[in-house]
Image (cartoon, rainbow, N blue to C red; front, side):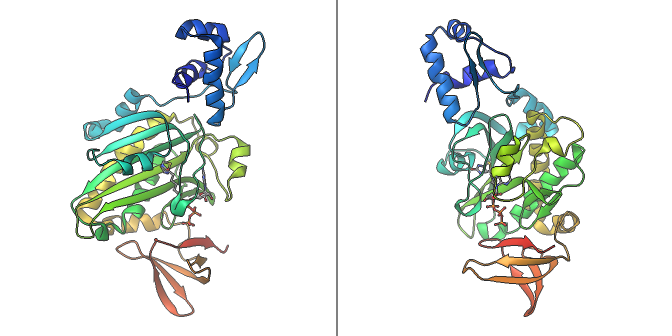
Length: 323
Ligand code: ATP
Ligand code: BTN
């Protein structure tokens, strides 16, 4: 761990060479201390070129999150949020879940997650400057039992945000993956605290691929895609986070009042597998095939199978398309 790692990375963010000596002078430390800071950055998966006589350089310029820009992009609801931007954290979800003191609408975004997680203990892959990773804590008066459609509602917020940024062909895979051309662009992990009766707290974690190098995209064990390859214009990550928070505020307030039912028709318009044949992978290792027949008012997936219309809840299931 080096406290200078991120200050040095902020200087290197311009994508130019900076000599060890200039950096050492700037931070009033030795060149060995700068070297240590660079070593720590490399241990976080950041690639840094080190060239004798020229210094250190990132493969390309990177765009760090800028709190003022995020707040500006949220618009009218900016006062709702308490935004924290961390350089390095295990997981923004774990960070918000561990602590009880966070206020409603606290958003924590991280430049680097060392243990980003997906559902059921799976790993979420991200990289400094190439991914947006953040979590939003939302307090609900109702209990966890009434939040079954929440993860689908969050998917709607992401699609609205993408659409307002000119990406109009994104779709949702039940319960909430965001796909473009059948490949995963963003993932949502919701963790709940509280009683079935209420009140409850939801930590809504979102990981978005911005411009991951091909080798990283290919290392992911399912087809993945990034925003740079689907957007017509460059989208700055601070602006993206602001727009996502604006849409989340809109959707979550609607969800508090009306539940998922008010968003159901819209969700179905974005549904990648509507009326398509799928395979549901069950926790006991077996699978069920059928034709998707939409979702119920509480977000439960309806599938026409050999046994008739079956209802599946998100908890332990994985859905796979058959075409
Ligand atoms: P489901 O179980 O609902 O079918 P899933 O297979 O997408 O969903 P999740 O737990 O939702 O699984 O997401 C974690 C998975 O996402 C990982 O196992 C990996 O396959 C994939 N993944 C990890 N990082 C990324 C990323 N940056 N972009 C796209 N996909 C990723
Ligand atoms: C999934 O598709 O399984 C969900 C992936 C969610 C990833 C995000 S990144 C920010 C937040 N912190 C985490 O550790 N996970 C979520």
